[in-house]
Structures are given as structure tokens and as C-alpha cells.
Image (cartoon, helix red, strand yellow):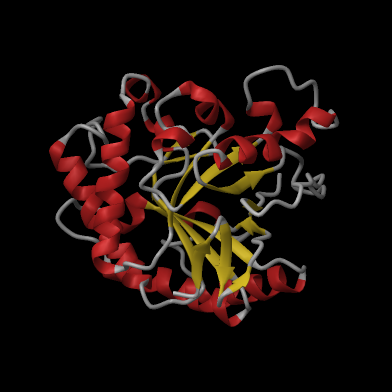
Length: 288
């Protein structure tokens, strides 16, 4: 793998690397990316992202599209995922792949066969997660532009009530189990798990202090979705939030800001948020 950590720095090909990018959806298909697959559009989009001066894309691997049946992972979907990673590499982009994506932007994109079972305590669901993360890791294990696999975008939001009852030990075991499964097939792939500000600040046990099994501690810095009092996106506190969360996570490991920004109309450009340079922090931003 081209990416590794050394003395609190992210390196690519043994040189310091600062990730600057976007969370990617094709404009025409959105969340139907893997079902309504169009590699030509993806290729064109990747080149446009690179031409804008960015170097990273973050992509949601919607679990339900890849694992429609608990007994099998869809080989065609895995082939499409690998192809996207290859198209990103051809454009000069690295990738953060958010596997186990069930929650996104306030939506629960659930598995039809989960039937409310616990992601963290049900033995069959734990085994299914191991199977899935291993299949994804194996599909991209030899791709040199995969920056990291994210175990689940704000995964505690899939079931906030149960997540609030999990102990730090339970979450640490969950992290360790899935990281161990990935390491069996892709020992050099970096692994993270992304959480919003509420979780980072102690809203559940999925905070940075529990993530010792992870390589990167990923945080989301959306000012209007954060606890506390941030008056508006124009407030200095809004600009400072991502750096604050990264500094907090950095006390426990290497921080990755893999979402920042705010909501806005699609016809307007997102207002940039600056993250101070730090050897323990880099970011991919989602436009509003």
C-alpha cells in the first residue's frame, strides 16, 4: 500500500500527504451509484475533481447494494467498486471508502434482512459484517490509491438508543473484530471510523478514546449539527470547529477530518472552512 503512518504523519510513497477532497456522488444517480452504474460518468467526474485541485474522494459503499442476501456479497457490486477506485487512480485521486454505510445525511438506508437486529451484539449481524468488510478489503487490497476504509459513516446513528447503552469495552471489541477481519485479507490498508461532533464529544462510546484499534480517528465538523452554541456558519466558532475536533481526536491518535462544511442550495458554492495545518490532521470535505 502507498499510504502509511509514521510519527503521526500520513505518508504516500513515503512523502507527507495532505488529503483535500470531496464526498462523491454522480450527479445523475446519487445514492443509486452502485445500482445505476455508469463508469463513463464516474471517469469524467473524477477528472473534473482532479482538475479542481483536489486529490481525494470519499465514497459511500452502501451495504444494502453489496450484500442483498446475508449468505452472499454481490460480485458485480464489488467489481464496480474496484473499477471506481481504478478510475479515481487514473485521475490522480486517492479514495476513502465508507463501508457498512447504513446511515447517511439523516437517512437510514437499512439492509432488508437486518430486521432491527443489533449491529454490535447480535452474533449473526457481527458475522455478516466480518464477511462484508473482508469482501470489500479483498476487492481493493492491491489498489495503491486507497487511503483508508471507514468502518461506517456515523454508525452509532443507525440505532442511537442502543448505541447509548454500549460500553467502551463493547465498542472497542467491535472495532477490533472488524479491523482484525480486514487485516486478514488486506494487512496494509488503513482503517478509520467517522463520527459527528456529538459522538466525538462523548454522546456515545464511539468517541476517539475507544478507537485504539483504528489507524485514523475520523471526525465530522458540521457547525449547525453540533452540540453547544454556534450562532451561524459565519461565526468564527463554525470555522474553528473542525480543527477543534481534530485536535481533540489527535490526543488519542491520528485525526482525519473526513467531513466539514454546511448545508446550502445546490446552485451555490459551499463556503470554505479552513483547517489549520497540523501533522496530525488532514481532511476531505463534503460540499453543502
